[in-house]
Image 1 (tube, rainbow, N blue to C red):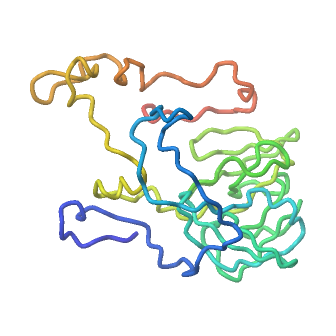
Image 2: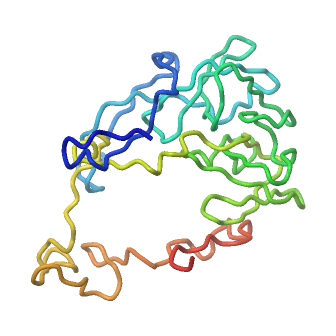
Image 3: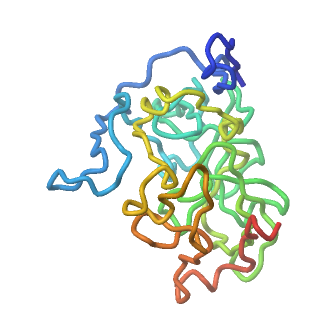
Length: 279
């Protein structure tokens, strides 16, 4: 982590990820596309999501989450780069046929390392294979939910899932939330932990940095009047005044279960994640 000299109060606790280990190169032009912002507006231009707007411009990097058309083709890591559109780092890989692509970078991957996608391959970090060929105890990321559709889960910085067992055509995975669930064993997954595990330790530090992320200011409910919010009113710092936490429209925001009771994926969940309150 990178820390800053406290020459202002906002800088005193401010931290950021140390990017000195990344490659100092321009992004690959063939993978760049323009990313338009909606700033929380709908097709009529009306605000439908509050507190969004502004922020710095970003070009989207096309990341290959499938790698299926490169089965058996050995790739070599050329660079490890920053991606403004995700919390994890990405790496540029050149394949044996001369094609270059971006894929998610795992922790401790080195420039010059070889990566390959196959139904079964060596157990090296960054390689991609079917879950049934990953030994119990190994950690994986960028996991498919349906065969040959590309990675859907475990893609954010520092995340990883552990292989617990293989049984009945399914692989039991322990997810970062603590949930244990079944995934088809013929689905592909990449070996290792996603890069940038220090992302969750970042302290924003000042309001201007939040605005650069495209997040506009939020007023606390307790600072409003009773007509504007259920938490409003009172003298000084008063208590919430309502039994359950609510938003300004009175909808319950904490403690209410939002998952559908008849969700199709219920049969794949072996053990629910543990609530923070029950830990």
